[in-house]
Length: 622
Image (tube, rainbow, N blue to C red; front, side, top):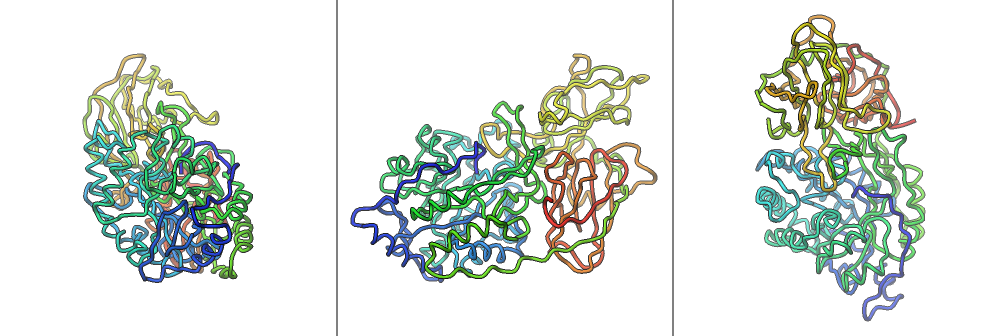
C-alpha cells in the first residue's frame, strides 16, 4: 500500500475481450473456472489474451489481503474463513522480510506467525487461492517497508537499487532462502499460489526497469517462474515507464483500465489494491474509514479481478508499525498507530463490520452458489481496572555507555534497529539548547530534572521546536537526551531514515562534542533483569507493573487513555506503542497470549512517575 491521496475508482471499462472470446463465452468460462479449487493437484494459471486463465478458462480473482505476521497464528484459519464467507476466492499476503531475517543470514520461517508456508497451506485447506507479495520491499505501513533495519548499518546504503552491492547481496540471500519454500506452493506444483508479485509500487520510487527485471530473474533462478504481477499507481507507471513486460499489470486506487491495457498489451490488467479503508497515524483526529461499496459493485458488474487492501488488517505488534515523512526527512512525519484495523471489513479481532455485510451481499448477488456461513468470532473477555505501580527506573538500569565525539544514529553506533538510545554529557545550566535531528521523540533532562520534550512530529498539538532553555545550575550537570524511536519510514525517497540523534546539539550556539551513548533496545533479557526501585521514582522514565485477573480467557482491549506515551507488555508480549494524543487509546491483546487467573502487565512510560488506571475495553474505539 502506498502513501498517497485516497483515490476512488472513477473509470471502469468493460472487460477487454481476447480474440475468439465473446461476452457469453467469457462469462460461461469464468463461471466454470470459479468452481476450480486448490485441491493439491497441479493447476495451470496463465496470463493470456488480457485474461487470467485457470486451467484454460478465464478466472476472476476476487481477493482480500491479510498479513499472517499481523495475526496470531491461532487465528489464521478463522480470518481466512471470514474472507471466504464474504465471497472471496483468493487471499493476498505480504511477506515482511525483516520479520523473517532479523540479522544477516539469521532466518526464522517457522515460529509463530512467521510460518507463512503454514498460512498458505491453510488457505489451500479452506479452498482459497493465494496471491503472494513477497517484496523484497512491500511498504504495508510496516517498519522500513519490510526491509531489514540491519541494512542501515551500511553508511552509504541505497535501497531498492540494483547497483548497491550491500542491498543486493541481502536481497539475493533473502530470495534464495524463501524461494525453495514458495516453489512447491505454486499452483503449477499443486499449491494454491496463483501469482507472485515482483517488488511493490516501484514506479512510486524509481524508474530503473532493470531493477524489476533483476528481482524477477532472481525468482526464476531459484525455480519460481511466475506468473508474475506488479502493483503501482497508474500515473506513476506511465511517468516512470516501469511496466514489467510479460507481467500482469496491477493498479492501485483510482484507475482507468482502458489506458492501462494500452500499456500492458495482451497481459491482464486488474485492481491490485482497492481500498475499503485507509491509514491512521498518531495525532489524527479519528480513525480512517473508506467507501468501497460502489467501487466493488462496479468491479463485480464488469467481471474485473481485484484485491481488496485489506480485508483484515490485524495489529502492528511490538516495534513493527512504520512511518511516513516527506522526502526532506523533516516535514510531515506521520508514524502509524499500533492497530492496523485500517477500517477493514473484518476488524482487528476478527469480527465482521457493517462494511463486511454490505460487501458480502454484493458478492452474493454475483455468486453461482450460496456463500458459506460466517465462522464464529473469537470471544471477548473483560477485567476489573488496575493501577500498575512503579517497578523500576530506567536510570537505575542503564547498560555500559559508549563514547562518541558526536551523536550518531542507533544503527551506526550499536547496530540497533528499534527502542531507545540515551545521549549524555555534562553542561552548565541556564543556556539555550538546540537539538537537531531527533529521530523521533526526545525527553531532555539536566541534573536529573526533567526539562521538556522534543517531537519530530509537527502537528499543532505537539511542540515542534527543537530549542529549549536549560534551568540555571551551579556549575556543570549531566545533560541527558533520551531518544525514543517510531518505526522506520516505509515509503518514499526518505526511507534511509536512521533513528536516534542524527544531528548536532548546540548550547548557546556552540556545538557540543564528547558524548556518551547508551543502547536501550528494550530487549527481553534486559527487561527480565530490571533492578526494582528502592523508593519512589524521582523523575520520568519509569517501568510500572500490575496484574489483572481473567475469569475466562478471551480477546481483550487495554485502555491506556490515562497514560502519556510509552510501551505496553502483557505476559511478556509487547503489544506495541500507546500515546495519549490518540486517536488510538486501546491496545489489542489476543486470547492466546492470556491465561485464566493472573496476567502480568508491564508499562514503560516516558512521562509519568505515578501509576494510572488501565481499564478493560470492548473494542478499539467507542
